Image 1 (tube, rainbow, N blue to C red):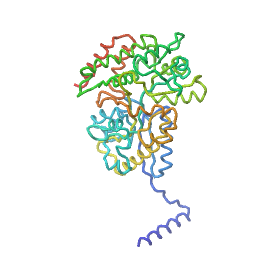
Image 2: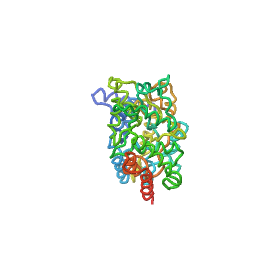
Image 3: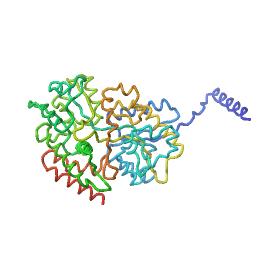
Image 4: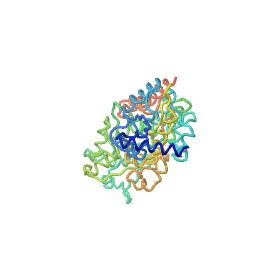
Length: 431
């Protein structure tokens, strides 16, 4: 009976073709995708989506890019609340706690992960932990992105701070780091260091501050208490360290994000602290022969007690659409997308990020990718923002960095007052 039906169907298709009528193609599963990826990140992700669709012709991704930060997360929250929004979206792991508290996110099940061969052992411990809230997985990590130290090899070599391996030496320890920055500040308009410390965006100040706090073994939040106990003293020391770089004239004051980069790329700053996402900028400028010097990048030195660096992660999440949940069919396609993106995240590494999927990070292809593999060690010492609705991307914590940390770094407020006001304001937000 089945054989006869197949013959009948085949004959019907042939007859339709004979009279010039096309046989309908198998319907594709349409997946709605939202992201916040612009610039180089956006270009690379669009390329990955195209490559995915080529490998998976039965799935079509309808992608939309929205504005990064608060606008994106507000749009996701309001859309999910009325049963609208995407089937899959990019999401910062640091925003997971807030997304869960507002009922915006749908957790992944163990069976969904197993269906595409994914599990805890595939990811770095810090990344995997940050993806969980109250024991449930709300995001599947794609990368780890952090701040790093960019350096001008020519200037470091001239100052005797470059080893025979072409990498910096003598930067570990606060006294050594300060001595190096001082030595690299030549007095002819060249600074030892450039950081983004100017308003109106305190995100860079927060990342450096949080790194220095973590290197002292400090904890920003403990049992819903902000900078409790000796953590306040450690926070003050972190701010004083940054403020001293500016006060001594080793790093300029009130520098915008773009200007902090320009100081380094023009050769006016020997070192520069910024995110891994600026690696493509340096690579492109070097290829265009617009740098004028040899450069490198490394994990932030151990300035205090142990290696630690602020980090976040782009991940994939699914909205909790009220009354219009993502169907089982769509979830099957969503999991196929997530798995493919992880297995092919070497393409994403070209944006400077460290792949969260360990099989890629440990591959020969990634180990041969320079300079990315030079700072891949930070994945093991990454420290994510506290799991709280007041921290993470575009959060109240970032606002306090703008309002208190930046003025203190630039000498407009003392460090003790800055961290105390930061603590009090955020503690009040938790009430």
